[in-house]
Length: 144
Image 1 (spheres, rainbow, N blue to C red):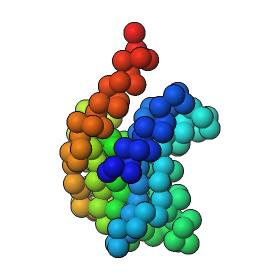
Image 2: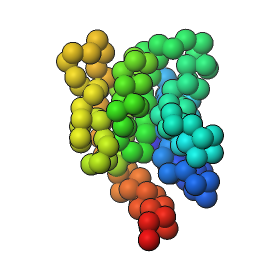
Image 3: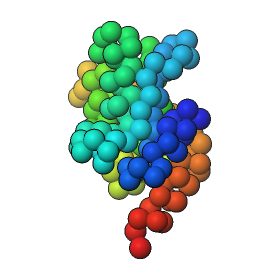
Image 4: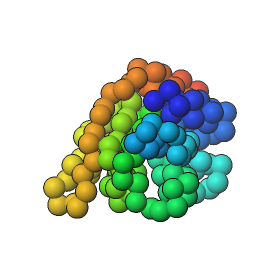
């Protein structure tokens, strides 16, 4: 989570919401990192999780990320929760809950939907206060 928080912090000052993500393999090696790049790249899919999953898939040379863990500072949205399921990660670890758009237990629970063919383990609330503080600081300067 510390690597994901560093990615989120690196997004500060870019105009993008400071969310960071990292994919680690079964040995704990980082195989992908990402931060929000929606504003920078004018890309609606430029969420930290998607960026990290793409980098991990490229590093491994395959889209199936079995054995990997997706770690993200904010609870994934529906798109990112779906990407986690489709990439076959073993687990999703997140920091702060997202009561407005969270899809890993808050508003929806995409990753645990029994109708899907893959359901990653979920670990929630890891360093949640630090992740929330980054977001609170960002939005305090953007919503006046």
